[in-house]
Length: 122
Image 1 (cartoon, rainbow, N blue to C red):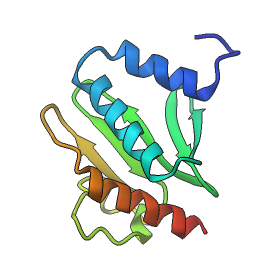
Image 2 (image 1 turned 30 degrees about the vertical axis):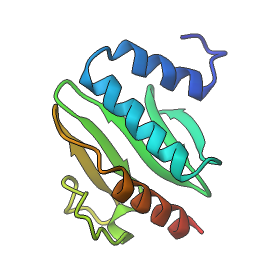
Image 3 (image 1 turned 90 degrees about the vertical axis):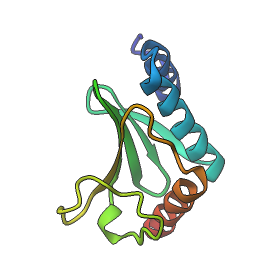
Image 4 (image 1 turned 45 degrees about the vertical axis):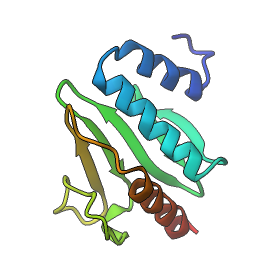
């Protein structure tokens, strides 16, 4: 990646370099985000973290050896009727969803949560 790459280019490259379930899952998460909000702003922050914003930061998509973590910046203020949040539950601001190998993305519930985060940013 070069400094001239756009954040979207860098996210594309991250997905491509993760040539296992993590890259495929991050691609599905990204597609759900873009479907939920076609005007979402893709960003690349903190030395290599994909981020999505609309009226402020919505969430990040971090990848680790054993999981993909989607952290919602204001997740503690969001209702989570589908029970997607399973990590960072004790914080005052953020909430996260940790996906391990074989975990499924509930696209409908995820998109509803993402849209609720946009509304919260208002």
